Every structure is written in structure tokens, then in C-alpha cells.
Image 1 (cartoon, rainbow, N blue to C red):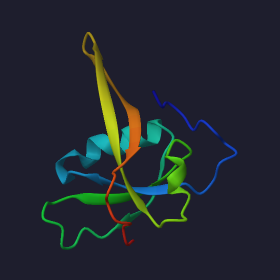
Image 2 (cartoon, one colour):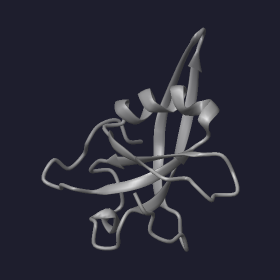
Image 3 (cartoon, rainbow, N blue to C red):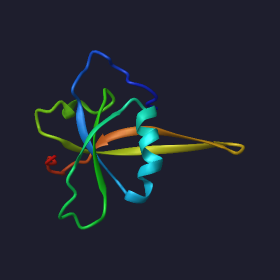
Length: 105
């Protein structure tokens, strides 16, 4: 489980994550709590579905996100736990979307 930036000696790992516009308000605090910085957005023009593409930066991104291959698309697995009335949402896993082309910012 990723709860903070794990390797402070690693820098400049950036990637793109696609989020459904109706979920963006719920997802941004989860990304920030996991130690990611939102540093921009990328165009979603021409995509067959409606999404918001955020450029995120953080040590928990895969090593391939070092910028050598452009901005790569990643998927996040989010886990929600409930304790009584309280719900805790965390980023459980980050993985590259295999076969996806680099994204143009």
C-alpha cells in the first residue's frame, strides 16, 4: 500500500492518469494523500470516452516513468475500507498501462 513518497532520492517520475470527470473531486485528495503531486493536465481531445488526464509526479510511479519514454499512462488501484461510518480510501497499486502510447501534454 502506498501512503507516502517512498524514495526521496528519486526525482522527476511523471505519468498520466485518466479519471472519470464525475470522480475527479474524490480522486484528487486520494492522490495527494498517497504522495503524488498533480503538476498539470494533458489533452483528452479525440478520445472515445470522456476523461480528465492528469499529469502526476511521485516516487511511487514505476521506474519507466523517468521521462525517457515520454509521459506514460498508468492505472491506479484504489482501495476503500470502512470502519463504522468512516471510509478510508487509499492508492493500493500503481501500474503501467501496457501497450499504451506516450501521452502528449
